[in-house]
Length: 252
Figure 1 (cartoon, helix red, strand yellow):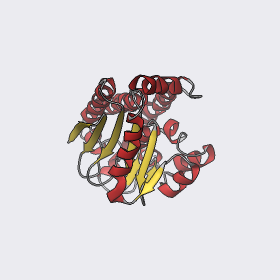
Figure 2 (cartoon, one colour; figure 1 turned 90 degrees about the horizontal axis):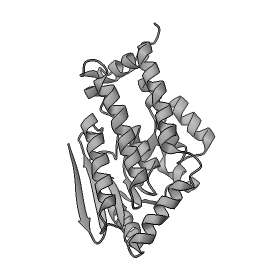
Figure 3 (spheres, one colour; figure 1 turned 90 degrees about the vertical axis):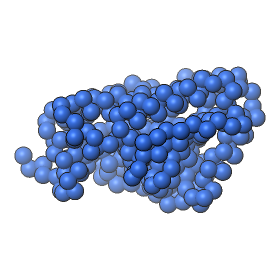
Figure 4 (cartoon, helix red, strand yellow; figure 1 turned 120 degrees about the horizontal axis):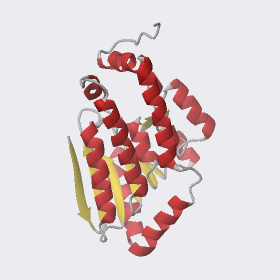
């Protein structure tokens, strides 16, 4: 997999590329956190665009890696890696514009929900399939994208929604054809970059300070229930079923 950074005109474009569906490994989540943090600390950078190549923006954690790893190391690593990456986007010293296409699932919701501005390609789907995988998490971030009752429905049913709904609620700034996605994200980033770097950085810090929910603590609370579910065995069965493309058996 690769995470690349292209800096130009005060903008840092951070691009994820991990075929086939941009599900990130444990190392990938930590790498993304480091890259986003470093980009924000660069005094020449005024905005970060977070995007992806290939199929989908992000499909969450690499479940196959988790099931192929003995013990709980991969589970713990994925939880800590996701926490680090989501936190890095939220605490990036400059605004982060997420450019989303095809689908944004699981961990992708954590990234996009913590971004400052969102643009998306037509037909993009947003969802949390965690319940189907015996896990919980990123409802904290989904609640920043959709109203409370829709968030709950999406968590319970694990069904995604079309970007048009998010646009109607105002959480997605623009919905554009796929080939115009990069340009739309760069246009917003360029406008931000015309402002004082100092003022924008203080604006980002101040807006985080007045958020009604501490997203880092809230997400960490959610993660505790994922560990609890793993101790019951239900999560392992759900992940095995996913890897082997069968229906999960929760009868036990």
